Image (cartoon, rainbow, N blue to C red):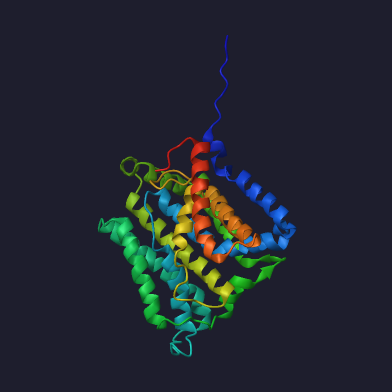
Amino acid sequence: MATTRPRLRWGAFRDFLLVPPILLVLVVGYFINANFVSRDNLTNVLTTMSGISLIVLAEVLVLLVGRMDLSLESTFGLAPGVAIWATMGTAKVGAYTWTSPWMTIPLALLVGLAVGAVNGVLIVRFGLNGFIVTLAMLIALRGLLTFLTSGFTLTKIPDSVEWLGNARTLGVPINVLICLALFAIGYLILRYTTAGRALYAVGGNEAAARAAGIRTDRVVITVLVVAGALAAIGGLIYSGQFASVQVSQGDGMIFNVFAACVIGGVALNGGRGSVLGAFFGILVLTLIQKLLSYGGVSADSLKFINGALILVALIITRLASGRRQE
């Protein structure tokens, strides 16, 4: 009797599809400069991506429920900007220090949660188009930060924010540990909990999920609120690293965020993907950018090369997976 071999399941390997490209970048980097694979440089890579990676994590959750949030990059700048403006002020902006420095992190989180809640209400309760709503929020939030700071960079940073950006424990940056911990929590929730399965159900077929008793509106709003909080944490880390908040903080990051998500196997129409794949996506993009800088590529060429590399990575992912990227 003839036996049939079990077919390899794509899902078993999809999350690790980017591991070979990551190893290839590391090998090429080693031959360009042996220091590329040193502990210090790899730690620097993880530190560099720690802020933006939390926007990636946030966007993964939003995409899984079949929505998208363009405003995350503005929340990334506005949340720490408002918190630091309120607690520290600047000589040029004025001493609007009506709160204590210890409130900086709670205030930033509150701003992130509020932005996510407003997005959720407008999209779910009012039935507005999510793309247009979050695009409008992106513009509005950027303008609000400019208005509050009068266009000046905030340079008085509380100790708590500097700690997030620069402190170390056992030689490992705190921001890297926070990033890895949040990704691990996201992975475990999506893979092993009812709440995680609800996200996939809503993104896969919202009507069927609603018929199965899932409160789809509550799920979507909750995801948008959590995404806003994650963007705020990422913004705090980024602000701590650079000891400032610029008006343009986060500007243009959303393009790399979506690239990391899609390269990592997250579907733009919902219901498919994982935080692990997205983590590898932002890691490979960051490694490539670092490799280009080691190779002496001029800053003016980086945007073109980054765009080309993203397209190549998408094509490779498409061929390897056998699935259309919708």
